[in-house]
Image 1 (cartoon, rainbow, N blue to C red):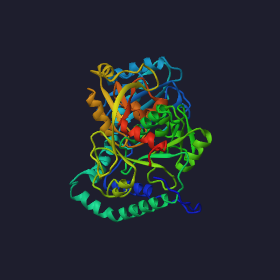
Image 2: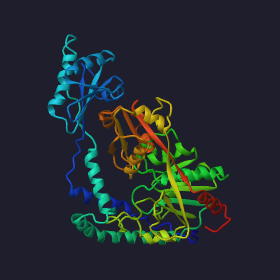
Image 3: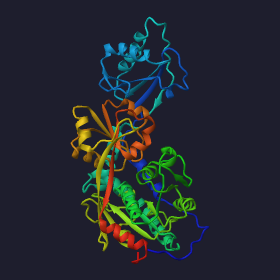
Image 4: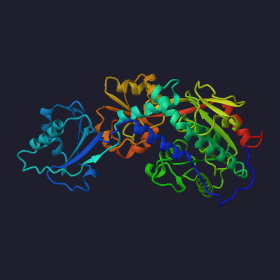
Length: 489
C-alpha cells in the first residue's frame, strides 16, 4: 500500500487510544480492591551504615520472609532457615562482610511477629561484639501483589475474550460501549490521514496488532528482519520503546540501559544485531535511524499500525489464538481499530494454529519455538531445554512473566517438562530487586524481555528462555519480492 498525497504539517497529531487504555484500567480498578504492599523493605544497621548508600552496597544481607513465616537468607545463595537458626546464619553472613546491612523483604502475608523475629535474630547474632543499634531507615511500598494483578488481568481477559463473561461484566461492557465509539472515530481518522502520506523511501514495513496486548509480533519482527538480511536486504528496525524513561527518538544498542532504551527495542537490538531506533514519535525514530544508517534499504516497524504520522509501504497484522476477542473496540473489547480494517492491509500473520478472524486473500503462518535457557548475567553456560529441565528437577522453580500473554509462556515451560510456580507481572512490568529477592526459589525463569530489564540485579538463580519465531518461507519470499518491487505491495 503506497500513500502519495501530501500532508499538512501543521495538523496536530491526536491519538486517543492510549487515553482509552488508561481509562479502561481505571474502570477495572474501580471494581476491585487493590493493595500496593506486596513487598516492604526495611534496612537496619549492623551496627553502622550510611542510609543513603545502603541499598547499593555489595555487603547487603538479604532476608526474605514468606507468608508462612519462613526465612530465605541471601538471594544469591538461597536457603531456607528456621527461626532458631537464623541468628547463627546472620552471624556467619555478617562475618564475611564489612559494615554489613540487613535488608528485610516481607511478603504481604507475613506476620508482624515473623519480621520482628528477624530483628531479634540480628541482635542475637551480634551479641558479644558490641551493642547493635537497630534503626529503621526506610519503608518502601512495592508494586501490586502478583496475585492481585493476576486477578485484575483475568477480569480483563474475561471481559474481552469470554463468550459469556457473566452478568456483571456484560453490564460493564454495555457501559463501556459508548467509549468504543471514540476509539472507532479515532481509528477511522488515522486511516484517512495515512492516505495523505507520500510513499516512504526506503520502503517501510509495519508488523503490528489490531488487538491490545501481544500476539507474537516482536519475535516475528526479529525473524523477518534476520531473514530479509540473509536475502541481501539491509533492514533497520524502529519501535516505540514503551515504558522507557526517554521518549525522544534515539538509537538503541545491545548494551544500552533498558530503562532508557525500552525493553522491546533493546531485545530487538540484541536478537538481530541490526540497527535499531526507538521513540514515541515513530516518524522521528525513522528519521534518526536513517540519518545514522543511510545505507538501509528497508525499515521495519515493530507495531505502529495505528500511528497516523508513520508513512508505510506494507502492513502485516498479527493475530494469535485469541483472534479478535469479543469483536468490540477498546475499552469494551480488545480491538484498537475496527476488524474490517484488517481486510485493507496487505497480509495476515497467524501465530501457530490461530484461525483468521476475517477473510483475507494473503495469509501466512508462523510459530514460536523455544531455543535455549540462558543464565541472566552470564553466570553459567546456556542450556538446551532438556538439559535445563534435568538441572531444575527436584528444585523449587518460579516462572515470572511481564508480557501481555503470560499464560502462553507458562504453557511453553510446562511443555518442556517444567512445573513452575507462576507469577504474572503485567505487560512491560519489571521484576524489581525486592521482588526478586523475595522469591523463595532455587531457579527463577523469565522471558528474554524480562531479562533485559532486570539483568543489573539478577542473581545466580535467574535464567531466561530464549525463543524464536519461525515464519512460513512463503512470507519471506513474498516480502522479498514486494520490497524489491517485483510485485505490487
